[in-house]
Image 1 (cartoon, helix red, strand yellow):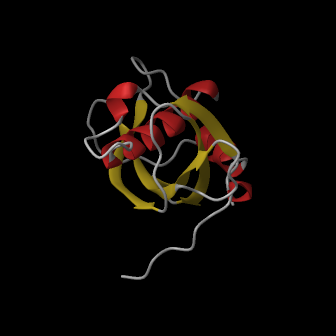
Image 2 (cartoon, rainbow, N blue to C red; image 1 turned 120 degrees about the vertical axis):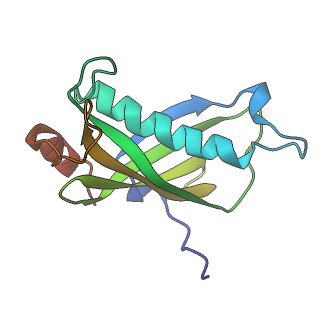
Length: 144
């Protein structure tokens, strides 16, 4: 498997500042790998909420995670605040591929980067449905 090219802040359209927590560190003294995926999930869902695209309790169409992945370039540790960048890399009929990255304070190159794939589904049936037009329009504003 080839190593991905390390991305830069300019590759991303939206950012969420996230303070690390004491509990995020593992026995090796750095943020544990699963926390990065949590940050990706938080950044994407925060964007959906801020854009009015998600009402957690009532939206008839919701997005489920079907794939995630992350490549690590350097360690992050408590106490730091990181910026999690997102960009819509691909919007399909019922799926959205977000590219996500974690940036240490003052750093231009990603400490870690990956992908986060959502599929839009009907809340009641959990079956895929097309990405709603309003969401598609707002995704275009954060697309590459």
